[in-house]
Structures are given as C-alpha cells and as structure tokens.
Image (cartoon, rainbow, N blue to C red; front, side, top):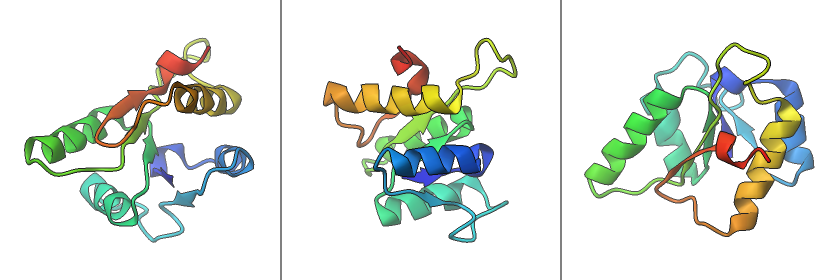
Length: 119
C-alpha cells in the first residue's frame, strides 16, 4: 500500500501496519509535493495500492490507465468533507479496508470508495 500525501498521518500509517499491511508512504520514497502522476507511477512500479483522499485526481488517473488498456494495482478512496460527522476516522478507515478485503473482490484496475465499507 502507498499512502498519499493527503492522508499522511502517523496514526493511520501505524494502524495500517498493525492491521498487517505492507505500507509505504510518499515521504519514504521522496514523493512529497510531486505530481499525482509520479505518485501513481511509483505505485504501479512497486505494485502498491494507493490510499488517498485526492479522489478526483486519482480516479482520473486510474481511468486513463484503463482507457489505454494498461493496468494498475488499485486505488482506495477516502472522501473528506471537512465535516467530522461525515469524515472517516482512522479506525473507520481500517475497518472499511478489512470489510472490503473480506468481500474477496479484486482491487486491481479499480477505484474503491471506502465509505461504502465503513459498516
């Protein structure tokens, strides 16, 4: 998993690792303030699912890859509304990822809104 800059939060990174995920952050690979294209390219090269709240941009990048008949490892989307009643907490993000994984649906070549799995 590659944690995008917009979700770079020690609590989230630690929780992802505690949940058993192989986590890399954009800061660890010197991609802070780099274009989304560079982040996505790195994720593809490393075969890492991107987790981001920069949803619109990464949906577009993922769709461009598929339109070009190219593949990507997948993107987990955390929509933020700047509203504590709607925004997902770190535990909710971890739960949503586990719930999605439990479905057995492959993430490759898809974008997944974690909001749908926050139950």
